[in-house]
Length: 216
Ligand code: DX5
Ligand code: ZN
Image (spheres, helix red, strand yellow):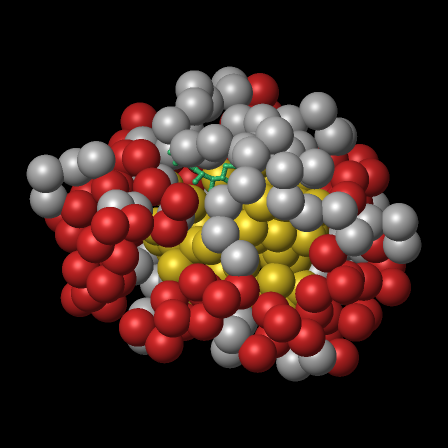
């Protein structure tokens, strides 16, 4: 099975967003990864729903929305209205993670839980059978182009083991500092999906880079 590639919109050229979205549409990327930031949960602000409405209109790939905001359940309807396939919420940003997962599923989206680099995999034990995906951050969230945190490879192995032991169907996605080298090691450890921002959008031929990640 090939690796799922989810290019991160955060590294796109916002002056020529339509061109970059056309490239994504032409490419072999499975999903489009969308990073929403509130300047509170993470020390940066990205883009909000008025912009994303147009992104969703121009993009024909399923949306993999990563909310780096506190209490993301406040926006389930807005995320749903974009036509989102996967709604990723941070474990650290939800007061009642179990309830939020149920709310996302009830809204017709796939619930995914995201962990910061400092949050251990073991906190997922009681919700691993309720989520469709776990997103492991391999950088501290907030910015593109950061250095990959090595310990993530071990976390992928640990999470894969938990998934196998519990019979969960959750996919493992990794986000931050992904390139061909780190990506290959993540896939070997058990990752199903890779998010890549800088590596894709700073490439001379982004479509080839996406193809390369998919073949890992
Ligand atoms: C970081 C975001 C990432 C970011 C990844 O907070 O969640 O999705 O765009 O960018 P790269 O691949 O450049 O590390
Ligand atoms: Zn992200």
